[in-house]
Image (tube, rainbow, N blue to C red):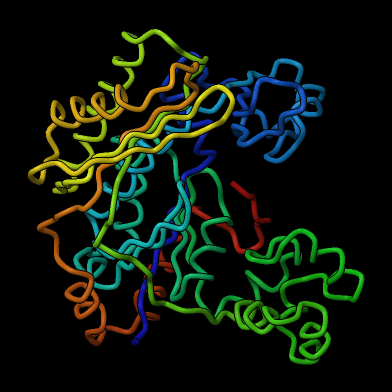
Length: 389
């Protein structure tokens, strides 16, 4: 495929940002998302918490020692999924070619749409500002000719940064960075590489070290070496043929009261219906998932007579399934799913045909224009150390 312009959009401190969005009283406070028992580890730390040295994967006890005023919030993963869904839908308004990388990040092919802007940087700026203004989620955007460079670029300035990384710039922007900053290489490999003299990304890219690295890292080594040299795929993986969607919630406490259970199911049906309607999806297979206090599970489904995304239908059928299958134990988690979906969206083949069309303008010309705009507005610096989200 011809050269392309890819964005990597990374929501900054997503879980913490989501909690602030739900409870504005948390804004500006050192917040972490973690379990409430002392053996928990930090899932996400707000940037205010990071100033005290708190970071993800840190034991909660250690985080509280570093920051006595730390605010610990238990994760609401159904809320995070809902926000993530809004985020991906919003990004698709700019380009249909979106590959989710995780709950809070995605790659976007903007090769064609970016030509509609007088200054190429305006697209990244517009997307970043609108994601913040309309979804209230801060993000960083990396711009590059392939997925790896776009991903590394998005890590170079957080929060709310925009960074362009072209292949010509890897010697100055990428290679001086520590090997610990290399995306894709696990933490267990860092000490092994450093002990063998591979301390920077430039060392990884150096042909003189190739045989040694191949021995140290095994079958994945060549891919890492190619990435360090600025080479990676520019083809995104996405599929518009969704098989099923679901909405679920882990409850703050175990529940047994039937009216309370009905209220939860009604809320889930409403959220699932809204999500299906927003994506122009209807389905015939309705399912209910129940997780009890002892972590035993029950998942039951039934086929409806016609395709639907109606809130009332989803609720009534889910309640029917629940009534027939609930064993009376206290409930920890509930979910409703909609499968056997039908959509009027374009097929993946139609989208791919458009992606495979030749690119009229050189990708490097677009990236060069982007970089030319950056120094004047101080969006990034070439020697800035990477900051992980």
